[in-house]
Image (cartoon, rainbow, N blue to C red; front, side, top):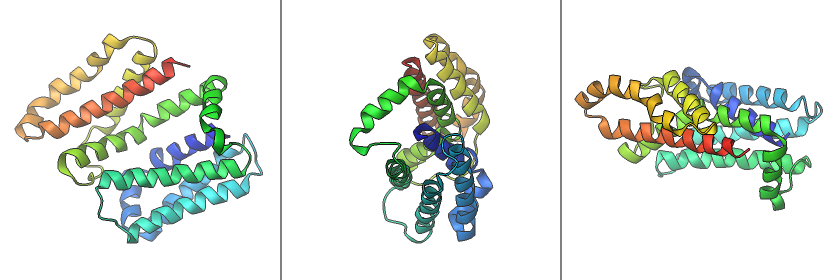
Length: 230
């Protein structure tokens, strides 16, 4: 159940939050409710194989997700967008941990030991978590990191991007690292780098572009190294 809930978060909050829904959520309470309904449904579906009657946990996670996102419509602290994003995710993950602890699936006092045990006993779920993370979640993190560190402002979604090509690159890099084929990692990014660089240089976006590229590679390699250990 523990890993399933974290996977549900990645799917509901990222993979199934398409660009128009993200834009709607950022400006309207109705958009927040629509997004929250997706999170609620995904959380419920992912809980079914483990405990079909775990309604209190599903309702708690879904309702608090809506509340956290709704608050951000009206409360915008004067801190960098990257920090706001990290605080948002920390709040959502804390709620999931609390729900799992209340349901008896996790002991907060021994989180490290529990997760270490799951890393060895739930290999398939860990692999699914890793690959889910490097799709849309990693794409969003890369954008926030690049815009926040280089421009000091939040990213404009979807913006000018090769989203699905970047996701495919991370999938390939993660897979190569997981199988120990480290020398193939640079070959994955070379075609896009060579084809896009003249346009990037002409638009004077080299710093921004390189930060995104480095952040994307770093996340893919880290996940690959973690998967290599299981």
